[in-house]
Image (tube, rainbow, N blue to C red; front, top):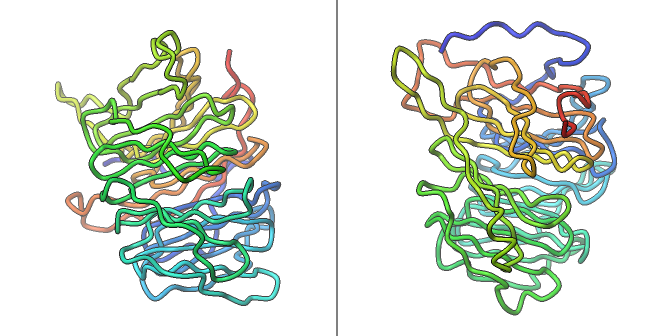
Length: 332
Protein backbone atom coordinates (compact mmCIF):
# COMPACT_ATOMS: atom_id res chain seq x y z
CA UNK A 1 0.00 0.00 0.00
CA UNK A 2 1.31 3.47 -0.84
CA UNK A 3 1.25 5.78 2.14
CA UNK A 4 2.26 9.37 2.65
CA UNK A 5 4.77 9.85 5.43
CA UNK A 6 3.16 11.29 8.53
CA UNK A 7 4.58 14.70 9.34
CA UNK A 8 5.13 15.32 13.04
CA UNK A 9 2.96 18.15 14.33
CA UNK A 10 1.71 19.62 17.57
CA UNK A 11 -1.51 17.67 17.22
CA UNK A 12 0.06 14.29 16.40
CA UNK A 13 3.42 12.69 17.14
CA UNK A 14 5.05 9.27 17.24
CA UNK A 15 6.19 7.59 20.47
CA UNK A 16 9.86 6.71 20.87
CA UNK A 17 11.32 3.36 22.10
CA UNK A 18 8.62 1.34 20.37
CA UNK A 19 7.93 -2.41 20.65
CA UNK A 20 9.81 -4.66 18.24
CA UNK A 21 6.78 -6.61 17.01
CA UNK A 22 3.04 -6.10 16.43
CA UNK A 23 1.18 -3.99 18.99
CA UNK A 24 -1.82 -5.83 20.44
CA UNK A 25 -3.31 -3.29 22.85
CA UNK A 26 -3.02 0.33 24.03
CA UNK A 27 -4.75 1.70 27.16
CA UNK A 28 -4.58 5.10 28.86
CA UNK A 29 -4.43 5.34 32.66
CA UNK A 30 -7.85 5.81 34.33
CA UNK A 31 -7.66 9.54 35.07
CA UNK A 32 -4.86 10.70 32.81
CA UNK A 33 -3.94 11.48 29.24
CA UNK A 34 -0.26 11.23 30.20
CA UNK A 35 0.34 7.51 30.83
CA UNK A 36 -0.22 4.77 28.26
CA UNK A 37 0.17 0.99 28.62
CA UNK A 38 1.13 -0.99 25.52
CA UNK A 39 1.22 -4.77 25.01
CA UNK A 40 3.03 -6.43 22.12
CA UNK A 41 3.87 -9.64 20.30
CA UNK A 42 7.50 -8.95 21.32
CA UNK A 43 6.42 -10.38 24.75
CA UNK A 44 6.63 -6.97 26.45
CA UNK A 45 4.35 -4.63 28.34
CA UNK A 46 5.52 -1.01 28.32
CA UNK A 47 4.40 2.11 30.14
CA UNK A 48 4.90 5.40 28.33
CA UNK A 49 4.80 8.94 29.61
CA UNK A 50 3.39 10.40 26.40
CA UNK A 51 3.79 14.02 27.54
CA UNK A 52 7.56 13.59 27.92
CA UNK A 53 7.61 10.94 25.14
CA UNK A 54 9.64 8.41 27.10
CA UNK A 55 9.27 4.77 28.10
CA UNK A 56 8.96 4.66 31.90
CA UNK A 57 8.65 0.91 32.54
CA UNK A 58 8.91 -2.39 30.73
CA UNK A 59 8.27 -5.96 31.85
CA UNK A 60 7.97 -9.22 29.96
CA UNK A 61 5.90 -12.37 29.60
CA UNK A 62 7.39 -15.61 28.29
CA UNK A 63 5.28 -15.39 25.10
CA UNK A 64 3.47 -12.61 23.16
CA UNK A 65 1.15 -10.39 25.21
CA UNK A 66 -2.37 -9.93 23.78
CA UNK A 67 -3.98 -7.46 26.18
CA UNK A 68 -3.27 -5.13 29.08
CA UNK A 69 -5.22 -2.82 31.40
CA UNK A 70 -4.81 -0.53 34.41
CA UNK A 71 -6.36 -0.99 37.85
CA UNK A 72 -5.28 2.48 38.94
CA UNK A 73 -2.37 4.76 38.07
CA UNK A 74 0.24 2.37 39.51
CA UNK A 75 -1.01 -1.19 38.84
CA UNK A 76 -1.36 -3.00 35.52
CA UNK A 77 -2.65 -6.43 34.46
CA UNK A 78 -1.59 -8.34 31.37
CA UNK A 79 -2.15 -11.69 29.67
CA UNK A 80 -1.33 -13.48 26.44
CA UNK A 81 -0.12 -16.66 24.81
CA UNK A 82 1.65 -17.88 27.99
CA UNK A 83 -1.88 -18.28 29.52
CA UNK A 84 -0.77 -16.36 32.62
CA UNK A 85 -2.36 -13.28 34.21
CA UNK A 86 0.24 -10.94 35.68
CA UNK A 87 -0.20 -7.94 37.96
CA UNK A 88 2.60 -5.39 37.91
CA UNK A 89 3.25 -2.68 40.52
CA UNK A 90 4.63 0.23 38.50
CA UNK A 91 5.93 2.03 41.60
CA UNK A 92 7.81 -0.91 43.10
CA UNK A 93 8.62 -2.61 39.75
CA UNK A 94 7.37 -5.94 41.13
CA UNK A 95 5.17 -8.52 39.43
CA UNK A 96 2.68 -11.02 40.83
CA UNK A 97 1.18 -13.97 38.95
CA UNK A 98 -2.55 -13.98 39.74
CA UNK A 99 -3.33 -17.24 37.94
CA UNK A 100 -3.71 -19.07 34.64
CA UNK A 101 -6.14 -20.16 31.93
CA UNK A 102 -5.98 -23.39 29.92
CA UNK A 103 -5.59 -21.36 26.71
CA UNK A 104 -4.20 -18.01 25.63
CA UNK A 105 -5.58 -14.97 27.49
CA UNK A 106 -6.99 -12.75 24.74
CA UNK A 107 -8.68 -10.00 26.82
CA UNK A 108 -8.00 -8.35 30.18
CA UNK A 109 -10.42 -5.80 31.71
CA UNK A 110 -10.67 -4.18 35.13
CA UNK A 111 -14.15 -4.16 36.71
CA UNK A 112 -14.02 -1.08 38.94
CA UNK A 113 -17.50 -1.80 40.39
CA UNK A 114 -16.13 -4.98 42.00
CA UNK A 115 -12.43 -4.12 42.23
CA UNK A 116 -11.89 -7.31 40.20
CA UNK A 117 -10.09 -8.32 37.02
CA UNK A 118 -11.83 -10.14 34.15
CA UNK A 119 -9.91 -12.29 31.67
CA UNK A 120 -11.28 -13.82 28.48
CA UNK A 121 -9.47 -16.80 27.01
CA UNK A 122 -9.23 -19.05 23.99
CA UNK A 123 -10.13 -21.86 26.45
CA UNK A 124 -13.79 -20.71 26.12
CA UNK A 125 -14.10 -19.12 29.55
CA UNK A 126 -14.06 -15.78 31.31
CA UNK A 127 -12.45 -15.77 34.76
CA UNK A 128 -12.88 -13.21 37.51
CA UNK A 129 -9.94 -12.51 39.82
CA UNK A 130 -9.50 -10.67 43.08
CA UNK A 131 -7.48 -7.66 41.96
CA UNK A 132 -4.98 -7.75 44.83
CA UNK A 133 -4.15 -11.38 45.58
CA UNK A 134 -3.81 -14.57 43.49
CA UNK A 135 -7.41 -15.76 43.79
CA UNK A 136 -9.82 -16.75 41.00
CA UNK A 137 -13.32 -15.97 42.28
CA UNK A 138 -15.29 -17.38 39.34
CA UNK A 139 -15.11 -19.16 35.96
CA UNK A 140 -17.85 -18.54 33.39
CA UNK A 141 -18.35 -20.59 30.23
CA UNK A 142 -18.79 -18.58 27.01
CA UNK A 143 -20.46 -21.30 24.95
CA UNK A 144 -17.21 -23.32 24.72
CA UNK A 145 -15.98 -20.85 22.10
CA UNK A 146 -12.77 -18.82 22.09
CA UNK A 147 -13.19 -15.35 23.59
CA UNK A 148 -12.09 -12.84 20.93
CA UNK A 149 -13.14 -9.53 22.48
CA UNK A 150 -14.85 -8.12 25.54
CA UNK A 151 -15.82 -4.78 27.03
CA UNK A 152 -17.07 -3.51 30.38
CA UNK A 153 -18.69 -0.22 31.44
CA UNK A 154 -19.98 -0.09 35.00
CA UNK A 155 -21.93 -3.32 35.56
CA UNK A 156 -22.49 -4.03 31.84
CA UNK A 157 -20.10 -6.68 30.51
CA UNK A 158 -20.25 -7.90 26.90
CA UNK A 159 -18.24 -10.81 25.46
CA UNK A 160 -17.77 -11.74 21.79
CA UNK A 161 -16.65 -15.24 20.77
CA UNK A 162 -15.13 -17.02 17.79
CA UNK A 163 -18.52 -18.38 16.65
CA UNK A 164 -20.06 -14.88 16.38
CA UNK A 165 -21.90 -15.29 19.70
CA UNK A 166 -22.43 -12.34 22.03
CA UNK A 167 -22.89 -12.84 25.77
CA UNK A 168 -24.24 -9.96 27.86
CA UNK A 169 -23.51 -10.19 31.60
CA UNK A 170 -24.11 -8.10 34.71
CA UNK A 171 -20.90 -8.31 36.75
CA UNK A 172 -22.84 -7.87 40.00
CA UNK A 173 -24.55 -11.21 39.34
CA UNK A 174 -22.47 -13.58 37.24
CA UNK A 175 -24.66 -16.55 38.22
CA UNK A 176 -26.42 -16.40 34.86
CA UNK A 177 -26.05 -14.77 31.43
CA UNK A 178 -28.42 -11.81 30.94
CA UNK A 179 -28.63 -12.18 27.16
CA UNK A 180 -27.29 -14.60 24.55
CA UNK A 181 -27.16 -13.11 21.08
CA UNK A 182 -25.77 -13.84 17.68
CA UNK A 183 -23.77 -11.14 15.91
CA UNK A 184 -25.85 -9.25 13.36
CA UNK A 185 -22.75 -9.28 11.10
CA UNK A 186 -22.17 -12.35 8.92
CA UNK A 187 -18.41 -12.51 9.42
CA UNK A 188 -16.06 -13.09 12.35
CA UNK A 189 -16.24 -10.60 15.23
CA UNK A 190 -13.09 -8.52 15.70
CA UNK A 191 -13.95 -5.97 18.40
CA UNK A 192 -16.79 -5.00 20.78
CA UNK A 193 -17.04 -1.84 22.88
CA UNK A 194 -19.89 -0.86 25.22
CA UNK A 195 -21.29 2.68 24.94
CA UNK A 196 -20.17 4.89 27.86
CA UNK A 197 -23.88 5.52 28.61
CA UNK A 198 -24.37 1.70 28.80
CA UNK A 199 -27.33 1.70 26.37
CA UNK A 200 -25.68 -0.64 23.88
CA UNK A 201 -22.48 -1.67 22.18
CA UNK A 202 -20.62 -1.30 18.91
CA UNK A 203 -19.32 -4.42 17.18
CA UNK A 204 -16.93 -4.72 14.23
CA UNK A 205 -16.11 -7.61 11.90
CA UNK A 206 -13.29 -8.74 9.62
CA UNK A 207 -15.45 -7.74 6.64
CA UNK A 208 -15.38 -3.93 6.72
CA UNK A 209 -18.57 -3.53 8.69
CA UNK A 210 -19.72 -2.13 12.05
CA UNK A 211 -22.98 -2.75 13.93
CA UNK A 212 -24.59 -0.49 16.55
CA UNK A 213 -26.67 -2.63 18.92
CA UNK A 214 -28.93 -1.79 21.89
CA UNK A 215 -29.18 -3.83 25.10
CA UNK A 216 -32.83 -3.05 25.96
CA UNK A 217 -34.87 -5.91 24.42
CA UNK A 218 -37.98 -3.67 24.03
CA UNK A 219 -38.98 -3.97 20.31
CA UNK A 220 -39.17 -0.17 19.97
CA UNK A 221 -35.56 0.16 21.16
CA UNK A 222 -34.44 -2.74 18.95
CA UNK A 223 -35.74 -0.87 15.89
CA UNK A 224 -32.88 1.61 16.38
CA UNK A 225 -30.12 -0.94 15.74
CA UNK A 226 -28.28 -0.77 12.43
CA UNK A 227 -25.05 -1.72 10.66
CA UNK A 228 -22.90 0.09 8.13
CA UNK A 229 -20.00 -0.54 5.77
CA UNK A 230 -16.63 1.13 6.40
CA UNK A 231 -12.88 0.65 5.91
CA UNK A 232 -13.34 -0.22 2.23
CA UNK A 233 -11.29 1.25 -0.60
CA UNK A 234 -12.26 1.35 -4.27
CA UNK A 235 -9.25 0.88 -6.56
CA UNK A 236 -9.54 0.41 -10.32
CA UNK A 237 -13.16 -0.66 -10.25
CA UNK A 238 -12.59 -3.16 -7.42
CA UNK A 239 -13.57 -2.65 -3.80
CA UNK A 240 -11.03 -3.87 -1.26
CA UNK A 241 -12.66 -4.80 2.05
CA UNK A 242 -10.60 -4.60 5.25
CA UNK A 243 -11.06 -5.88 8.82
CA UNK A 244 -12.14 -3.30 11.41
CA UNK A 245 -9.66 -4.16 14.17
CA UNK A 246 -10.26 -1.56 16.84
CA UNK A 247 -12.99 0.60 18.39
CA UNK A 248 -12.64 3.21 21.13
CA UNK A 249 -15.28 5.48 22.65
CA UNK A 250 -14.99 9.16 23.46
CA UNK A 251 -16.43 8.92 26.97
CA UNK A 252 -17.68 12.51 27.04
CA UNK A 253 -19.48 12.66 23.67
CA UNK A 254 -20.45 8.96 23.17
CA UNK A 255 -18.84 9.15 19.70
CA UNK A 256 -16.36 6.44 18.69
CA UNK A 257 -13.26 5.85 16.62
CA UNK A 258 -12.69 2.79 14.41
CA UNK A 259 -9.35 1.60 13.07
CA UNK A 260 -8.98 -0.74 10.13
CA UNK A 261 -6.45 -2.78 8.18
CA UNK A 262 -6.82 -0.14 5.44
CA UNK A 263 -4.65 2.14 7.62
CA UNK A 264 -7.44 4.63 8.35
CA UNK A 265 -9.04 5.92 11.53
CA UNK A 266 -12.64 7.18 11.32
CA UNK A 267 -14.67 8.98 13.99
CA UNK A 268 -18.42 8.25 14.09
CA UNK A 269 -21.52 9.67 15.72
CA UNK A 270 -23.39 6.41 16.29
CA UNK A 271 -26.65 7.94 17.47
CA UNK A 272 -26.99 10.23 14.45
CA UNK A 273 -25.49 7.71 11.99
CA UNK A 274 -22.80 10.09 10.74
CA UNK A 275 -19.08 9.96 10.09
CA UNK A 276 -17.55 13.03 11.73
CA UNK A 277 -14.08 12.77 10.20
CA UNK A 278 -11.36 10.57 8.74
CA UNK A 279 -7.68 11.04 9.56
CA UNK A 280 -4.88 10.66 7.01
CA UNK A 281 -3.80 7.15 6.03
CA UNK A 282 -1.27 5.53 8.40
CA UNK A 283 1.74 3.44 7.39
CA UNK A 284 0.02 0.06 7.90
CA UNK A 285 -3.04 -1.53 9.57
CA UNK A 286 -4.44 0.16 12.67
CA UNK A 287 -4.22 -2.62 15.28
CA UNK A 288 -5.41 -0.85 18.45
CA UNK A 289 -7.00 2.44 19.55
CA UNK A 290 -7.58 4.14 22.90
CA UNK A 291 -9.07 7.49 23.84
CA UNK A 292 -7.90 9.03 27.10
CA UNK A 293 -10.60 9.29 29.81
CA UNK A 294 -11.38 12.93 28.96
CA UNK A 295 -11.32 12.31 25.22
CA UNK A 296 -8.51 14.82 24.61
CA UNK A 297 -5.99 12.29 23.27
CA UNK A 298 -6.25 9.23 21.01
CA UNK A 299 -3.53 6.56 20.93
CA UNK A 300 -3.28 4.92 17.50
CA UNK A 301 -1.24 1.71 17.19
CA UNK A 302 -0.17 0.65 13.69
CA UNK A 303 1.08 -2.88 13.01
CA UNK A 304 0.94 -5.23 10.04
CA UNK A 305 -1.59 -7.89 11.04
CA UNK A 306 -2.09 -9.86 7.83
CA UNK A 307 0.86 -12.11 7.02
CA UNK A 308 -0.47 -12.66 3.51
CA UNK A 309 0.39 -9.03 2.77
CA UNK A 310 4.09 -9.41 3.47
CA UNK A 311 5.88 -6.70 1.57
CA UNK A 312 9.57 -6.43 0.73
CA UNK A 313 10.12 -4.57 3.99
CA UNK A 314 7.76 -4.96 6.92
CA UNK A 315 6.23 -1.62 7.95
CA UNK A 316 7.47 -0.26 11.26
CA UNK A 317 5.30 -0.92 14.32
CA UNK A 318 4.34 2.54 15.51
CA UNK A 319 2.15 4.35 18.04
CA UNK A 320 0.87 7.84 17.35
CA UNK A 321 -0.59 10.13 19.97
CA UNK A 322 -3.14 12.49 18.46
CA UNK A 323 -4.62 15.39 20.40
CA UNK A 324 -8.14 15.54 18.98
CA UNK A 325 -10.42 18.55 18.69
CA UNK A 326 -14.16 18.99 19.35
CA UNK A 327 -14.56 19.47 15.61
CA UNK A 328 -13.31 15.90 15.11
CA UNK A 329 -15.14 14.19 17.98
CA UNK A 330 -18.26 16.17 18.98
CA UNK A 331 -21.66 15.40 17.41
CA UNK A 332 -22.64 18.14 15.01
